[in-house]
Length: 222
Image (cartoon, rainbow, N blue to C red):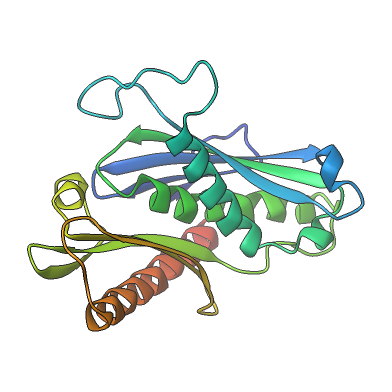
C-alpha cells in the first residue's frame, strides 16, 4: 500500500495484491445528497476498470455503470460506511474513487482495503485543517477473497484460481472482528459447514493481516 499516490486528492492509496493493482482516491465535498439532509454525512464509492486492466480491452462504461459495477460500488460503499461515524462527519460527503489499473482477481476486495486507507487520510486532513475535532473514521475495514480450488482452501485468489474455484467467497470485516459482508457461492460444487468454517477462518486471518498493513501504511504517511 502506497499513500499519496494521487496528490491532488484529500486522501489516496495505491494498493497491489499480487498482480491486481488499484488506485483509490478520496474526495471531500461539502453537503450531502438531498435524501441524506439532516441525517449526518455520507460516504460512497465509485469503481471502474481501465480499458487495458484486463487481457482484452474492456470498453469504458459511457452510458452509466453496468450491473456488476453497481454491485461492486455498493459493496465498497457499505464497507467504508461501516467504518465511519456518519453523524460525526457532519454535512459532508466523502467519495472514494477506486480505479483498477490491472486486474488479476480480487479487485473489489483490494478496492475496499485500499479505499479504507484513502478514507482515513481524507478524514485526517479534515482534522488537520481544524474542520473537525476528531476523525469520523472509527475503524479499519479490509476485505479478502477465499475459495476452494481443486479441493484446497485458498486465500486471495488470482484470476486463474477464481475462474476454476468450486467455491468463491468475498469477506469484509472491521478491525474489531465484526463482519461487514460475506458473499459466498458454490461455483462448481456445493460445500459443507466444515468447509465454510475453514474459509471463514482463512478470511479472518487474511483481514487481520491486511489491517496491520493498513496501519503501517498510515503510520508511514504521518
